Image: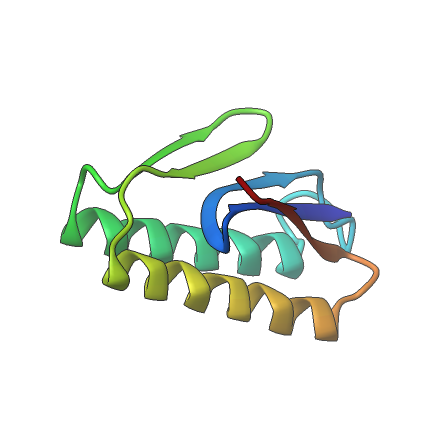
Length: 105
């Protein structure tokens, strides 16, 4: 299962971590993994075209996205990504889960 963990601080999204594998199908044939990858890549590319200093991301064993700047457009793009991931969760609840970790200062 893909786990998407969203870390918020005072209602602001600070970090999103993707881990695991959907296990919907074999590697290379998994439509859930492909969908999550497409959503993530499209969002990252849009943010980087807008402001290359707004985020940090790395793709290793897990995928990590850190928000470095509070910006309305960046925030809307990230919210859109989360909404799309939640839609995938509705269609494939056994393959993707969304978790929110909220910390208040």
